[in-house]
Length: 116
Image 1 (tube, helix red, strand yellow):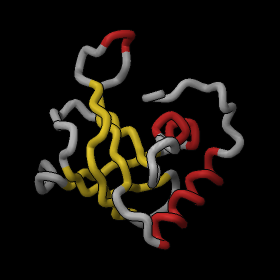
Image 2 (image 1 turned 180 degrees about the vertical axis):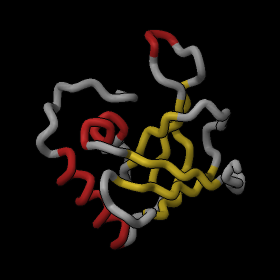
Image 3 (image 1 turned 60 degrees about the horizontal axis):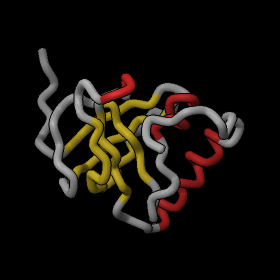
Image 4 (image 1 turned 135 degrees about the horizontal axis):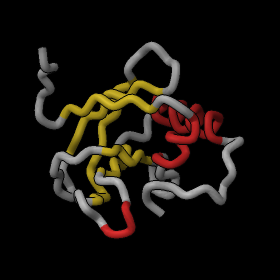
């Protein structure tokens, strides 16, 4: 049976630190994530991400805005997906960004990412 997902709600699981490093967008004002997906989205679309992070049991709710789109069949074999800018800067999101930083702190900073 297929799982029904409401438009604008996107469940996403990041299974390891290397994937989190490649996906994280720290250069955005409040941080963000690149999500591999081939569903079409437009810049400026609002989205609600339900993130499962590595081995944590709970889903992390994140409000965001699409600020990056890599289309299917992009040049240089880039994976299709969207960059989601976190739109909240509350205590919960500050804590999440700190948690992400701890997860990826030992990854080689010269490693390639999904965006820049």
